[in-house]
Image (tube, rainbow over all chains, first blue to last red; front, side, top):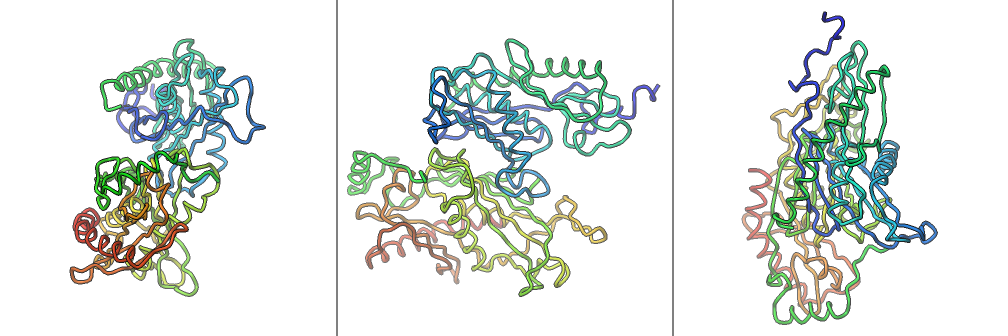
Length: 241
Length: 274
């Protein structure tokens, strides 16, 4: 019965419920950087630039045992319909930190004491899922920069619209759907080899079995994303970099 | 503030040596610009957006419209603001934090070039006199700094403004519904002017500098020029850095600027207005 299935029986953009948006990735988009990549999902575009390892200033922040990963995430003022004031804000500061944690679990900076590796993530165009697109771009850029990595990491937004589990929420699903049980948004990052969770946030209402199902969905989706990331990295040799 | 690239003396000497023979590292002549590449549509959520490449220098420029209360001294005029972010993404020489002097100067020089030329018809941006006007935001984001951000930003701002459409204004609810109309941003196309930046390096005047050239120059002079019956007319200037301009420097720069303007104006006008 429709009552059991809830009211979200068809996605606004016609995708299947577990279907991710069209993805593309490109490596080497910023010439002066040590590593750089773009990652696009549907209308969401992310750019990541890696600079380092380089000496960290001020000196008291240095770690003599290993290098430090420092992430800065930001949305460009014209990336959304209501202009965002340039510069950091509470949202971007938090996303920078959770992204940093998500990436820190896969990099190994023990060979680079007293240094910092900076990851700059910028969003030129947003249609939900910007933090996960940013992580996907950043993982590629870190690999491009030759930063030692234990494994890759891929990220996706999964969740629930009313009673229906979905993968890769767009802006309508993430922000504009408020009927019945509303929208539950769960950004998840999965490490490529060990299949662990390195980013997890959630807001909405969801049962424990449904949440477990969402994590499973995220793992399946991240396999697809990993392929796009690896392909982009393989293209470096044949491309113009 | 480590905002300037440091160039080893050896490299500096080599640049000067090359220039004395009329050559540059990338095989350009001193007065030659790098190729201009224009890609529209960086963000579908902007009223207009463009990616500008001058060689390897890349900037993104977006135009957004908002609603504002007019200033008391000009109650029937829309307002206009240029902001520039020289994000550390774009260069190892940029730092995090509040916009530094370089970003402030960049946005102010770009702002002045547009404001003083009268390109934006601010009177047509009035919705209700004394109460409600359109506010035009031009946001410049540096993506890769390989020298001459000034010209890339200025050209990007003009092209973005030229292609901007007004969004829908819902008068009943007094808010913008982001759906672009066919109405272009009101502009006075006749006054379009764009800026060209020249640096003095050794005893040569050099156009469209790369990063290393920029770092060793004595001064830079940015000149914005518009069209006055087919002849260039100066609309804005800014001298930067501590060197001084001699009469012969000025003569050389004005000639170069006039020639460059004649060569580039039709192309830039076409990008801006189709």
